[in-house]
Length: 120
Image 1 (tube, one colour):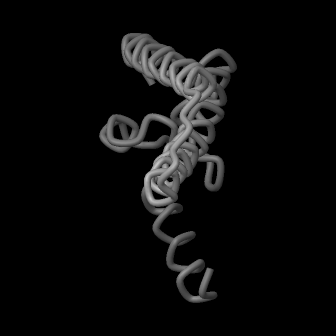
Image 2: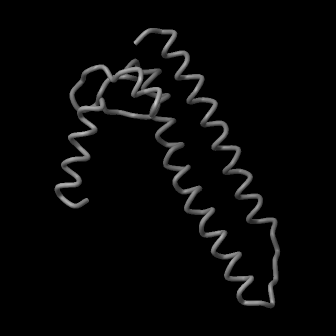
């Protein structure tokens, strides 16, 4: 992969990481600042449902943060854009679509087919 491409993906991933970390901070402060006391159980249940939904979103974002950090590590190590499974180059188009990917489209397709066959 060309150095210009690596620089582009490093900037893209760094920006996305910063956005996710800022959102996580906002969520934590927003959840700890609120001191609601709802006499109506329905209102309380709605608040709890909203909080649970936000926590599930943040959990998914936390997993993405970890993947972004690993992708940045791969850029530094010189292994970014190389498929973990077959060792071939991952197409730039695939990396643009999913910058944290670790597999080329062929290997990922095979993995998903295997997971579907096993019912995972």
